[in-house]
Amino acid sequence: MSDPRRARPGDEPDPASGGGARADGGARAGVGARTGGAARPGTGGGPGRVLVAVYGIFALAAGARAAVQIATRFSDAPLAYALSALAAAVYVVATVALGLGGRRSFRVAVAACAIELAGVLVVGTLSLADPAAFPDETVWSAYGRGYGYVPLVLPVVGLLWLRHTARQGGGPGTGGGRPADGGV
Image 1: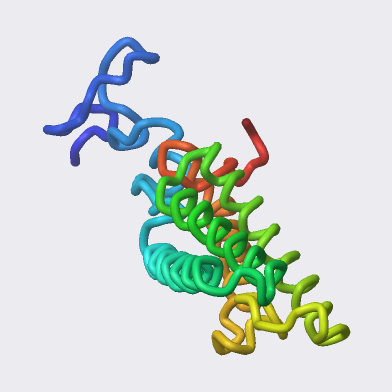
Image 2: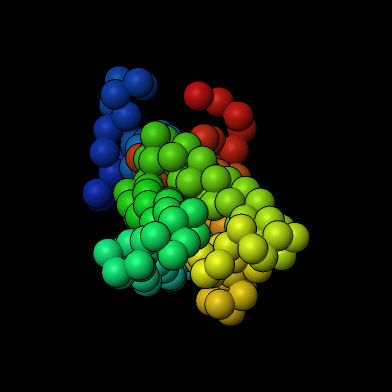
């Protein structure tokens, strides 16, 4: 039988113990130690890549739509077109923050998704309650009806994904936000 305290080939010495094999099989503390030895994907890894891609597509679609509307007929519905431009900016921020990962990007992504959800709910409600205030649709009008209600679902999925990555304990090294144990 082999002695578990003996170093195996490829093990790094543990600086804290003065040498020998590391108890965690060589994983760095804070990266793999909380996740069973394997670094978890951050907010932009794994299924998060699909989320980043969808946000990117919406950033492009909303930005192009707003640019054309503002350039060609801004006086027809300035509020609606400005809100479409705001939606595009929020999608861009969310796309970048979700793709980058890290503690600051995690917080920015949460804020962007929350602003997006609030925007969809407020503008969606106002556009149905007072259609005269919105002579042309925005991305968020009628809760995103013109985009298949994806603008309503997307921030919810984004916030759930961010919560999931935070609970997985993927700290700033893996892009997942705060550690699962609530530490800093």
